[in-house]
Amino acid sequence: MKNISSVISEHKTLREKIVEVLREAIIGQKIRPGERITELEVAERFGISRTPIREAFRQLESEGFLTIMPRKGAVVSAIEEKDIRDFYEIKGVLEGYAARQAVDRMTENDILRLEQFNKEIRLCAERQDVSGMTRAHNAFHELILEVCDNRKIKQVVSGLVRQFLRFRFYVASLVHVEEILREHADIVAAIRSGDGERAEACMKMNARLGLEVLLKEFSSASKNTIE
Image 1 (cartoon, helix red, strand yellow):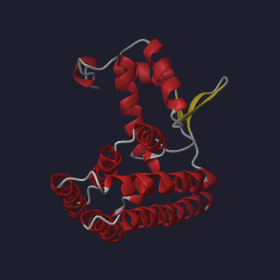
Image 2: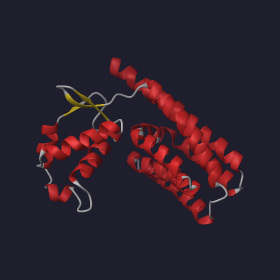
Image 3: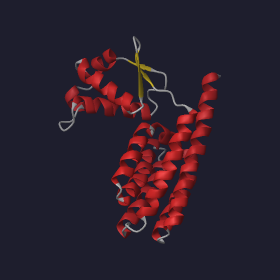
Image 4: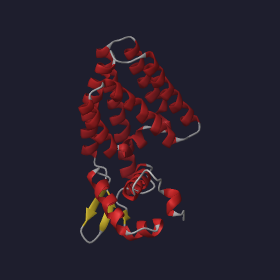
């Protein structure tokens, strides 16, 4: 067990660090849907009081990662098929619009960064580093949202993605890396050519791919659970 001082950095509160650790564990499937997490368990692990843990649980509940159940404590929230469909429907529309708006604001350096994120995805795939792929995948989409320069869209999409990062962990899988890279390359090509309409269409296609991949993974996981 690591000493709490080695786990919690100076610039973050206890609550923030606990949220970060638990969120990453859920995203990385180290704690799976339906599993229970108790305040006592976390308190013993980090050697701290339950107050910041209770606050962290409430934040994770608001983000959709946990469900607080009376007399049972916190349970990792289940992933429902409708949630997946709703998420990608909203994501496709908003990120598509963001890509269209970003076309006129993208610098050559921004485009090179998008291409670099794609290279990182491939390198991580070669190392079988799915977590690294997920980070690079997220960074690709986040840069487009940043350049779009619409704070409201960025806030909405970032909030949604924070709740559904677990989904991207499935999508950014080694099996589908070539499809991800091909669609990302199409988005970059559209942006480089200054074709906002094409960039929007490519982004929506990318969201549809994410939906198809995730529904397939979700169906397979559900079947294995039943069996």
